[in-house]
Image (tube, rainbow, N blue to C red; front, side, top):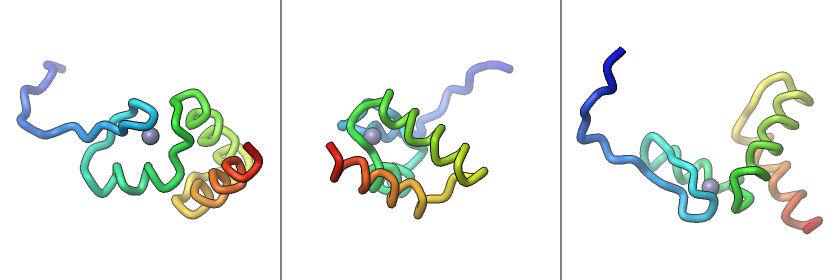
Amino acid sequence: MEPEETDLQTWACTWCGGAAEDEESLLDHQEWCLGDARSNSRLIAEVGLRDGELTQEALVAEAKKRRERA
Ligand SMILES: [Zn+2]
C-alpha cells in the first residue's frame, strides 16, 4: 500500500506527544492522557486486560485514580 498523500491534519497531543485522528479524538484522549506515552500504553493495556475491551469511561476513570495516586 502506498502511503497516502493527504491534507488531513494530524492532531498531536502536546502532553504525551501522541497523535489523534481529529479534534474530537484528541479531546477524548486528553480526558485520560497521563502525560507520557509509556504511562498511557500501560493504562490502555491494563484496562484492556481487566475489562476485555476499552471504553472511554473506563479509561477516564482509571486515569483519574492514577492521577490521584501520583
Ligand atoms: Zn496525550
